[in-house]
Image (cartoon, rainbow, N blue to C red; front, side, top):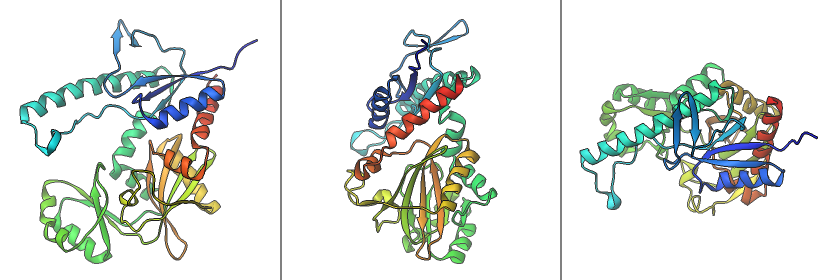
Length: 317
């Protein structure tokens, strides 16, 4: 009798609690997983046209869960906040670039061989490139905030004057969104050296919807007075107040449509519900943190993602 037992590849930092939670759910469901270290410690090799990891051929694995990979640009600061010498930073950067290039080549090779990645590198790049994600969502008619991405101070001033309450954030992420205030207006000329995202600030309740291709795994309201809910006191320690909520069927459909548009298998979607009941989409996160919702609200998100991986693997048979 043919067994239905599957082996899944989990591309991740081996200590990532989200990945370990999904691995445990796969085990409970009768399947196996192998963590493929993405933080630079894993050993990949390419020999005579064949990719191997730690000396092993991974051809048996059809479906890979993609959590993260080594950043191409390492931090440029030492402990204590002192900047590295340029030479030290350059060597580190080149070292990381080489590892990143091999990992990305291996991942692209998986796709060329017909393997399935959840979520794959191409949409990962789309997701990290926030301007392109905004472009796609806006072109498709999604309800997103009025936005401008510019390095022209006068263009930014015109936008701010037109929209009043405006937030700004970096194009590639890595910092909280902040409100434009008098101090920020005084520093606005500094954007000539780099691009910045400016968006109309949407008043309302922060909502995170965790969704797979055909299922809403959780919809959660975060009690927050912060401009960026990640800056809520206690958020990083999983102490922020979170409540379960319902979202309208029309908004659920837009969530599913967004996954298809961005070619994602699942996402953590950030929305705002305005005081008059409208929903505004802020971002589709490709590799969202979800344990804080799972643990607070007792929602089986890890189980849902494991189910998704198994469904994809069965469909690929």
